[in-house]
Length: 317
Ligand SMILES: [Zn+2]
Image 1 (cartoon, helix red, strand yellow):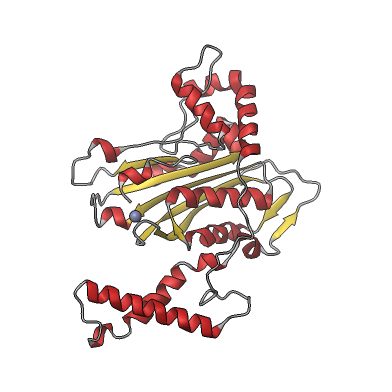
Image 2 (cartoon, protein in one colour; image 1 turned 90 degrees about the vertical axis):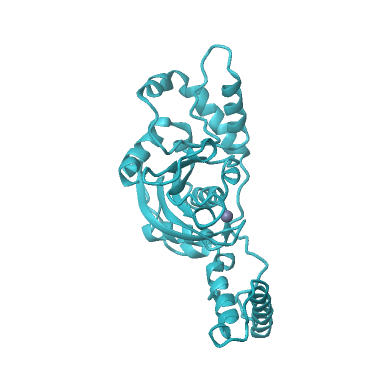
């Protein structure tokens, strides 16, 4: 992913960091960029242009926390004075946010996805053949001889691999969670649940090459809780589709919000994009951080900071 593709995240804070050992000098456009932050807290005085933009972003259903470092204590002090205002804005934002369709399935077929719907063997075979033809064409276009022994089975292997890498199109988070949600009646939990270091392998939709990294999910349940491994499974459903990191982060957060109706959800992801480190700008030490926060994580910088400090982001990178 090129730096220009990263700056557009409207619902997630995006921060890129250049590791110190990267040999090339950093340039302005790929050292650090943070988009969509609403950490700027409105004050009673006439709002600045930036603050108005942040409020507009909040009303459009966007919210973000900058993942690179916790909000300073200065922000922490200012926060309570504006808590009501911020909460009201966040509630408006939440009511306007489009819901994702948890039942939505791609129109593509169920080949290799292990989906219980009646498989159509003829259609699957036809599709696989079509994909093999396309891969042979690609091999020829890059100057290879698709009939040489080493490449004979490559088209079919590649087609199957691609279907595996995109099997999330055949799954929905609701069916993944299945019966692993239960109501812990009488208990309205307020503690934060965090599952960190979920390994993510996804495909960038711009280049169809992998981006890999780790996702951390935190939520504060109400009475409804879910088996912890299911949070990772939800992430997997969305990761196994063509993605951009910003959307992946947001979709996971929204799915958990819709399924569990928790007090809030926060998702942070750090990833390396092969399209970026092996081609284009070739910044091998570059990683991208995205975050998406909903509910109480969106409303309260204190809750966001607690989440980020529990992740110990600064130490792990
Ligand atoms: Zn890419």
